[in-house]
Image (tube, rainbow, N blue to C red):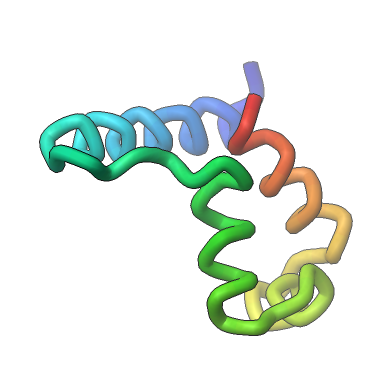
Length: 67
């Protein structure tokens, strides 16, 4: 498993552990990244530009979060 996938999984695990501690908080159906991005009114390309990554990487992160 690539290091970026391991790190991403570790972050997801931490968030999931925290969410279990807070009653009523669950992972949004579309995932946190997409939910927050939509709440901010940002498109994938806009977030990618802001983070210095491609829109394809943002899309991949969106999809991997739900895997």
